[in-house]
Length: 113
Length: 119
Image (spheres, each protein chain N blue to C red):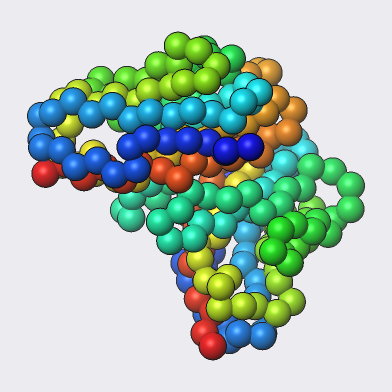
């Protein structure tokens, strides 16, 4: 199994630009989670999906952030427009129904200048 | 409210010595508890979990954790630490708020404990 796949691994962009992060969960997993990690705020849950349906987006910091899961094998997290304070490592994780533990991808390190 | 606390920001231990990383929890109902490890520039890796049964849970890389209901703790332990165990460790609890089926796999993470194992 290839595990959770995220792309790109690194993204450097200028303030105001649109950023799209991508995630392919482990096949057969029913849940998909997007997290953000910074030194100041630690690990924060942004949004999660169950069977492609968004369940809880209360962690999404602002309307500039949006996430979609058009099918069971793909999800995107979009930031538009990006700001320097969005600089962080963004993780995607997936989880199978009934087992509870989450499996994390390698993350996308986003730098907004 | 569901929460976990990791009281130590950093733990320093000499290689070969026992390693303990502390975690306490607060949940309503039966706790489902987890430990993860994060190596530099990597994602979090699942180490072990407690759902029910034996209070001593064994996991990956020689780690184990002891569930203590009376002390509401779930400390991570390793009998003999290695330099390669130096990493960031997270405790987590299954978030049962709302008690709806779809919330079942949401986890609440602690703030993390950095472990430094010195040669």
